[in-house]
Length: 270
Image 1: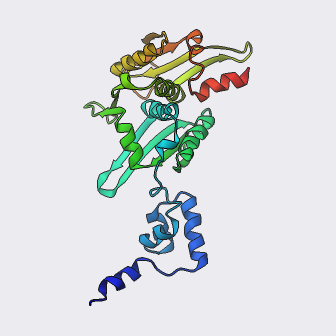
Image 2 (image 1 turned 135 degrees about the vertical axis):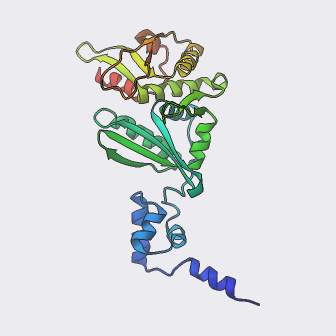
Image 3 (image 1 turned 30 degrees about the vertical axis):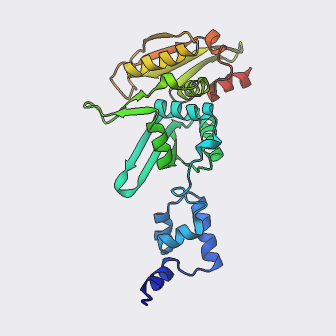
């Protein structure tokens, strides 16, 4: 009987010292990929994974069952408002990226990371100029989003148009979370700190069809809105018209169970 298969199996996992194993696990916890650790330590990737599969960001799976309907809806809203994909199927790369304002949205970033941690999924976080960038390495999460959001190629821009899928069938809790995620990612809440009063929330989008879908979601929740075209500013990243959906304070009060960190700030500021 040939011994070649056994010899090959022995070569898959190099014998390492306790210190080398500790180094691998420390680097994995810091957010480095298998390839980066392998290059840095000059150890085969199969050996790296063998000793650090609990910590490697590409090898931890998102446990969606650990999240509530509202929390899952919130993540969909965050993606629709400010998320992008980096997908390279040939390399097995499936990344969902969120970019938040470094000065104002640290609490939102903390909340998003907390939701993924609840689902046993690590998030790579770093500062890029004026943004807090969150990267989620997960094919499961990309597939989950694809069931709720359609991404359509556009001829005049590299950005893909987003449209909601079967949103009429979403549960009330999912819709409440979705609206909260939209406000936290692509929205703004007006608040008078001197008077301790809130003056409603705005959600912006350059996608007219998406605007109509968002209004439909809010209407289904019993929330009345006002919509109008936003003013163009010189610092705007796009020349496309901006549609604004305004939710008055009275209507926000009808959604006390909505998940939104920006609205929570107003409560804490009172």
